[in-house]
Structure formats: C-alpha cells, structure tokens
Image (cartoon, rainbow, N blue to C red; front, top):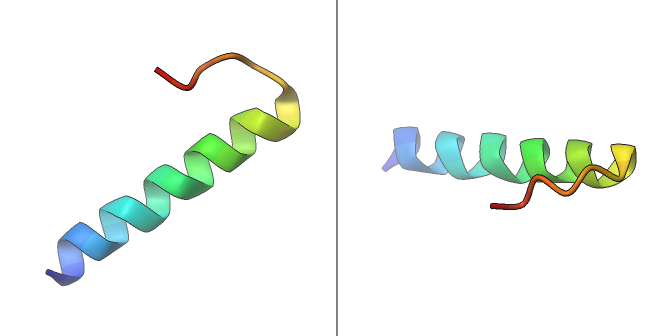
Length: 27
C-alpha cells in the first residue's frame, strides 16, 4: 500500500510539473 501511495504521489507531481510547463503530456 505504501508503495502504491508513493507511486500516486509521484504521478501527481509529474502531471503538475508538466502543467506548469504547459506541455500536453497527460496521456
């Protein structure tokens, strides 16, 4: 469960990072 939570957190951080750069990499 902890590993899954870490993965979700990393994924959200990755998406947020690309939103700031305005890069359409949501898929």
